[in-house]
Amino acid sequence: MTPLDPHKLPVHLAVIMDGNGRWAQQRMLKRIIGHQRGAETVKMVVEQASLLGIKYLTLFAFSSENWSRPALEVRALMTLLKKYIRQETARMMRKNIRYNVIGNRRELPDDVNETLDGAIQKTAENTGMVLTLALSYGGRQELCRAAARLAEEAVTGTLSPVDITTELFNKYLDTGNLPDPDFLIRTSGEMRISNFLLWQLAYTELYFTDTNWPDFTINELHKALADFQSRERRFGMTGDQITERGDLLNA
Ligand code: FPP
Image 1 (tube, rainbow, N blue to C red):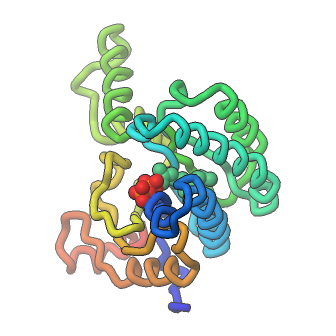
Image 2 (image 1 turned 90 degrees about the horizontal axis):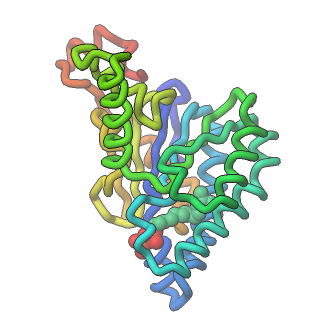
């Protein structure tokens, strides 16, 4: 496995888990089998990220646009999600992992929300990795929700528009209590962001692999993280400035 420098890991790793459907179709299997196999990869990545000491892991599990998929696939994904959360919560407790959810939870079925609430409550005091599931999540939708809340406060007079800074705006996002991702991995060969964390990815290092999500292995994860460690992050500054500001290198 590619050796990793434990001091240069991303603080926040985000993943677009793509290619479950194609993985299944290539094997003449139903798409949901691909999602089931994808859930096994989720287990591996959660376990590895936590073992490596990554503080925040955010997984794009269901997008705002995924509601347009065939009803059968949507239902199967919701059932799989519930099953995963129920089965994995004990392990999350053992590994000191805290659940978090971003996205428009109002669009999720009640039983899914109940399962999520139970898991969030149960793991609320855990102090290890924060595992954020993006569910019914879209970056543009999140930005609109934040803008609507700010506008409401401006109308009622509790906020003046001139006070809207990037720091303040950030607090109104679903990710208000998370740092921006340092590293984004997308599987299955697609090289786009697909409405994921549009604001938060401003300075994130991007990594694309052709591997479909169900085939993504520990080795590939390490390879991706080693690639991250080879990058110079400049945040709009010069390389010399960054060398002087060592604190930013692993911000
Ligand atoms: C993209 O593959 C994946 C999804 C839309 C869902 C992701 C869900 C999982 C990995 C399993 C369940 C999740 C958790 C957190 C337990 P795709 O269907 O778009 O693949 P395709 O592009 O090949 O059709």
